[in-house]
Image (cartoon, rainbow, N blue to C red):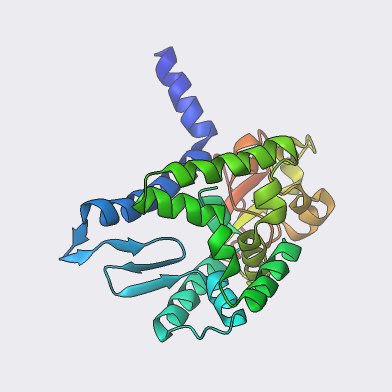
Length: 263
């Protein structure tokens, strides 16, 4: 009985982290299953490609908008399908708000983003796609042996351990910078992290676990009632750690405060 309570407590405490990891794994399994074992639905391939460019059921295009911008900077005119796919992805994550892609899908700053686009102009190629740890990781797991994926993970881990915490995701990854801009451009994101000022004791536990600490400014949160869109990953770590239930997910501009047990 005590073990069951312990397991329930763990799942409850880390529910959003577990759900995020499950989402990442599900996306990876769909890609890998289609590439390696030919998974189909109604005779159509389930999910072909990788995070840079893919097709659902061989019909619905999904393309990385940053890769599309890189190609434009390199003087490469994208196909209509790629443009539609990039638009669909931008609208989807833009409506969700913040850096939801980084927190819920990505397997792994603005100056870097500008540098990537400039490099694409100078080299005539999608520069970041050739060195992206995310691309190495996903493509090698889906199509290759896994060794390049391991190298990409170890490189990012070494950066985090030796130079700066959250160095890649928080400071260097141009995809993070891109989705931060997209999040800021969405005035009413569907997913928000709401803040209840009267519940908050300013214990700062949320700051200890947040990968983007600059988004938690208590004075600003007390005025707006939510974590600002942009740099926030919508990862839910702050919600999990908050013992006062001062933080919770909400949909759209919902104003009602949670009663009892918020999400």
